[in-house]
Length: 354
Image 1 (cartoon, rainbow, N blue to C red):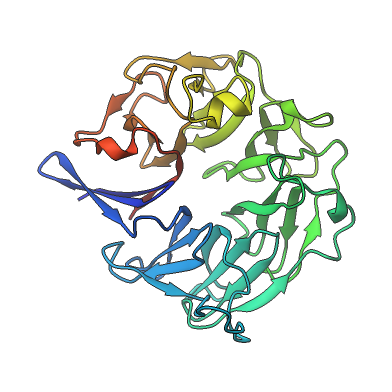
Image 2: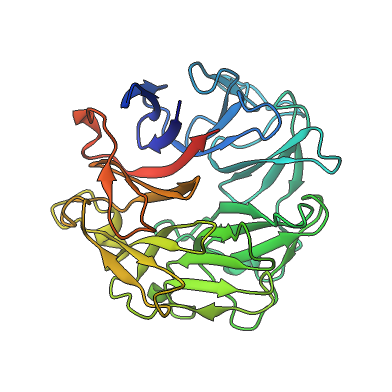
């Protein structure tokens, strides 16, 4: 049985495959879910961060949910062990140092990190990044008075190394399981990394997809580092729609990205909305190629969230969920009846439930 979770503007969708078809269930409507992660030790546990209602937890693979970490009402003071924010923008569960239990890192807006070592029973503040030089220059373009933790990733070969990205403030990293953090000091480092992926089989490799092309100083759409962020290279040949939003990579080192010609076209919710998907394969002389076969019309498609599972790529958007078994060249829609109320909703993140 295959399962996926996709966060949309006003609900979390749980996809469950039954007899070749997918059943879609909508969870906690109106909570504005954004980020989602699965516990690596107890895989029945899923965490979801929302933009306005804090952090939520499911211990039955997404069937039921309870709020955690922000247990307050009206004007009650936060408890010491709470997350002192309601805008949770990034969540990721990792195996801890011993590898036998898990820890949960929670990123917020404004940018802070909280950690839980007891599956969400209590939290402690890790950092507000006040020690990071240049924090005063961080900004999120639509709301330039603030910024947030956007994405998290870890080194599969050295799990003590964890990376986070700030929108928009570049990349930070920890070498001690998230206890302390420092800024990426690479020359000409990328600024606005929307998704950062570690490569499952190639040591030292990071891939990122960025909005840097629309900033005064920054990289292009896709960046690559073969030394875990010490240096960065652009890999953009063939990309015409240069605003990057999501990225996925498989074990064959095939890459797919979702892009648009501008942030407005990617996220506008108007008739001008348009987005596309590109793929890049190692045996295809490093060229990006636009994918069209099996995907919805670019016009009217809000930019897609991407993931990979068992070698297959998945893309979620307002037209449905699509998959590619050919490294991103051809796509098919999941066999599911698409709910009409989601044709104007933005997909934020998609993950497989394994």
